[in-house]
Amino acid sequence: MKRRARGGTIGGRRSASALIIVLWITGLLAMLVASFAFDAHLEARVTSYYRKRAKAEGLARSGLEVVRMLMAKRSEIKDDQEPPVDDRWFEPARQLRRGAIRGLAVPMGEGTVTIDIVPEPARRNINHLVPGPGDNTRVPAEKLAEEWARILEVGGVPDDLWDELVDAVLDWTDNEQPPQTRQRGGEDEYYKSLTPPYLARNGLMDTVEELLLVKGFSRVILFGGQLAATNSVDGEAVTVRGIADLLTTYGNANGQVNVNAASPEVLMTLPGIDDIDVSAIVGEREGLVDEGGKRDARPFKSVPDVFGRISQLDPAVGPYLTTEESAICRVTCVGEVHGVRRKISCVAEFAGTGKRMAMMVRRWTEDED
Image (cartoon, rainbow, N blue to C red; front, side, top):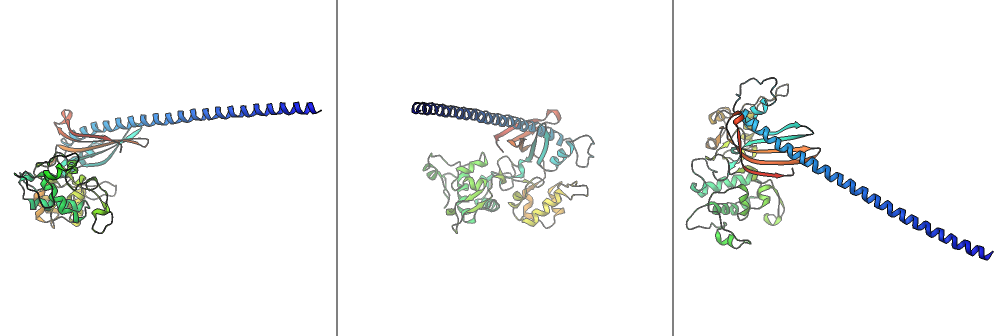
């Protein structure tokens, strides 16, 4: 009896050990299978994302062809022309002729491309802030300081920073010989002390982003965000909208702004303009919406037309305005496929008409939207 009990106990232990080993092996196999399944799922998702990303980029590039077609069509239509029944591009082309296109959604295949076409004179030319044939190097510093102050104000930059920023940008762009450093500005001595060191431009700027090299200017001041509390008078953080979207280096060489295409914020940077004037300008050029939901846009035909329709405007703003079309536009195409987006932005110059329309890119960027 004892031997049987002892033998039965040993056999039971062996069976239990074998069962445990089997369970361990089964668990490990299950973990391996789960790991393989997870890797396969992850790889499938990554592959799907890159497939959608490639399609979205293709849509964005296709949008550039739509842009070229609309620019060619812009020169062929007239404001009072009746829209053809079967021409889906007539209204966008007429809208472009009247000023600018913002947020034009074009369905394509699995996704959509959203297009902006805005003439560069819809922004302030950073090298020609004061209207006239001369650039900033020929304009009195006091006059330039007034222009910069309005730009910084619209950009939401605290006014206690204006003097330093204005002095710095004037020192950066002037071509005085020998260089004269303003009270809060900076010349070669300041820039040579930086790591890495460099020299002041002492001339016209190539891009708006060049302001990041100028003393006091930061990405927050240019592109918006929260300014550090140390830069505020009351010691609290300040939210800044930024000034980059108000400026260009490709705009009107006479310093004028296209009144039919400029955003309300750009219009606010002009002398003698307040929010009431801006509302009147935008309301006049965009017109009323009829019962069918169609907007009767009425762009300004000339600067005298602006003052004729908005009599309360300050005459001082007249030299800053233009209604002339521009061959240089800022184009943005955002392709989207199932939530994945790719954005192409460029500054392009258009030349020719019809099928001979050529698009010459002056600046190009690609990124996620």
